[in-house]
Length: 205
Image (cartoon, rainbow, N blue to C red; front, side, top):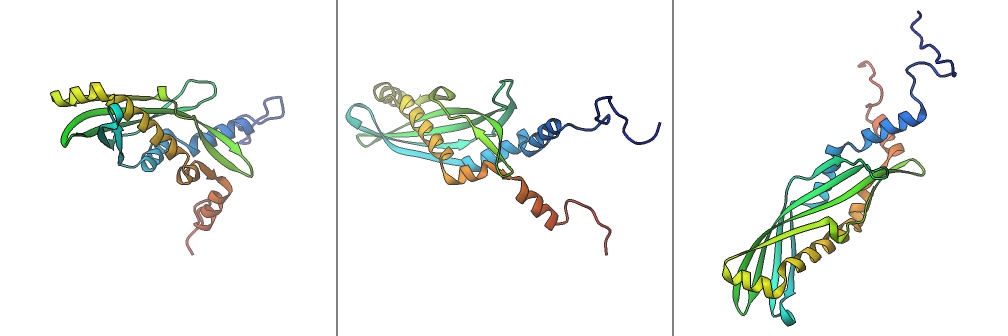
């Protein structure tokens, strides 16, 4: 048998990729889960601050939430439309001031969204993120001490913080910086690779 690929009987050599197979592999290479996680982590940042917020009846108290992002997790999604699930965990510290007194809370936030890769003209791979809904933000805020339990019960601190985290994430995803990071210019990428001699290895000299 010669070294050339043989025909399948349908005009296509054995081992040759179809355009659909090639596109699928390129998309996987363009947005592997670990790289997607790194990009999302950089866009979210290491820390976030929300507030001060008015809490309690008539806004009698003021709350400020400070968060620290954990490791972003990205998993393959079995949905027919969406391809990956992104989870961003955040640990929270919430300080509430009421009548000159400071009470504190500790909490956690977990934000989830899904994404797919979309092909746009002229030759761009766009990472399309599902809009984050309220049900995709899971927040738990636990009081530290009796005073915090009382203020939390009266002021609905956990609910207010969850709503503000949702607004923060939605505003972040709508920002120009986030939008720019979601587009991969394939033609520009290949041009830069050619200019840097990364496409073809040539002998020195």
